[in-house]
Image (cartoon, rainbow, N blue to C red; front, side):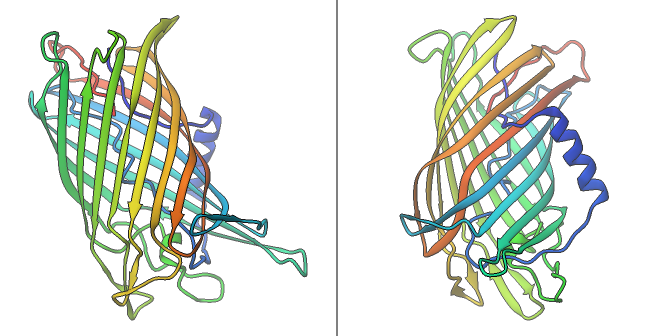
Length: 338
């Protein structure tokens, strides 16, 4: 049985966070030097759905940024902290045996704390709302079977500027771009998933997932400027081992690489943006039934080489809940894990 790539945090926190998103709307300041942002590129957690079936994947992602890096050096600083809460809702519909369509609807909450060393006061700023919705059409080039152990799915689609990118703080200034729930630009997403079942062992699989985000420009940033996030390449690769303990369980260990050139503001590099990140992602997936499963994971940095001084991820946790609805009862469910 295959599963679905997810990410972690307790169910109670997920529910409370979802309620908070619906009822709270704030404003935010932002830092010019921060590698935060919304994890849309890595949120595609579903492969191709079976024909006439709908898959639902809800992921809560919590990105904690406390490490102040200057290129490769970790600086001593406890005066600032960033946190991004993302509730990512993915819907995947199987059109036929080879084709499926997917959409990701994010709800984002950005938080920032800055402590004044002299007055010992802390400034707390929030920006939140609907993020940029992503749409993807996916095609199964190779399908895994008893004879064919390789699986390859490719996808392409737009990320649409549905989230606000003009939120202002209490002083009336536009928040920095990486604190906004939306980017204000039309972007192109390119996605590939490759899996080899029975890798060295019948219960072991090897996976590789790549995402390339080609970003457009927000021509109305701060009313008069043009802002463009750097194009982002993310590659995740590793191993998944399945076993049975009350339920079918997948234990996995992935390595994740991300490269992003500096952002551009009015066609000039924006200071304190861009770099190279490498991290490890251990986690576990529990299959409660063929149609229901949940997964948790943690992402820990192992290497960072950044452009200038940036506040970057200390750790990242996520939790996902998956449900499959078969519209055609004659079809047999087949999971594709990302």
